[in-house]
Image 1 (tube, rainbow, N blue to C red):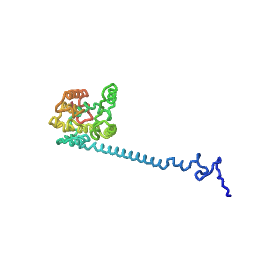
Image 2: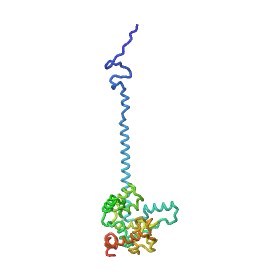
Image 3: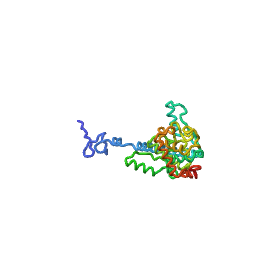
Image 4: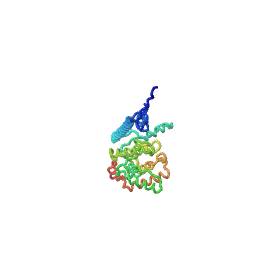
Length: 288
C-alpha cells in the first residue's frame, strides 16, 4: 500500500500551497496585488511636470504681452495713433448693421492746435485732479464707494488716463479682465507719457457723438469750424456729452446737456481758468 504524504505546514500549522508563499502579506493576499493598489510614482511625476510646463508657458505669454504693451505705449508717445479700439469696434458694428459710410468721423489735431479752453473743459468735466494724480484718483474712488455704501448707485471714478487706456486699447464693459488690463495700461501710460500727451490723445479719441471721435471731427460736424477756433462755451458743450455721447447730443442739446454745460463753465472758472493747466497744456499760462 502506498503511503499518502502529509502536506508540510508553515506558520501556525497552515498548509503551504503554490498560492500562499511563505512570508507573504497577512491574510494570505499576494504582495503583487498590494503593489497594484498604489499609484505609480512615474504617473505623479508626469502630472507634476505637465502642470509646471503649463505654468511656465502661461507666465512666458504674460511677460511677452506685458513687454509688447510697454513697447507699443512707448512708441505712441511720439506716433499719433490712427485709430483706437473703440473706433474699430464702432466701425465693425456699423458695418455689420449696414449703416451708410462714413461710419467713423475722425481727424487728428495736434495739441498746439487745440485751444486751452477745450482741454480745461474736458478736465473740469471728467477729471479735475488730472494734473496732480498718477493715473488713479483715490479721492474720487473713496467718495464713490462711500456713496454706494450709503445706498446710492455705484458711479464710475475713471480718470482721463484710465479712459485713454480703455478707449485706445480695450473694449466696452465692466468685466474683471478688462479692468485688470485697464489698470496695467494706465500705469504704463502714466509712466511713459507726459500729461500733455495723455490729454492730447484723449481729446483725439474720445467720442463726442454718433460716429464722431475726437475734437477735430466734432468741431467740424457740430460747429462748422476747426478745433483751433472753438470757444469756451463750445468746448463746455462738447465736454457735456462725454458721459454718454450716443444719448447726449451737441447739435440738439437736451435740458440735461444744457445744465451740464453751465456747470462745466462754472467749474472752469472755479479752477482758475486755463492757468490751471499751466505746465500741462501749450499756451495755457496767462490765458483766460
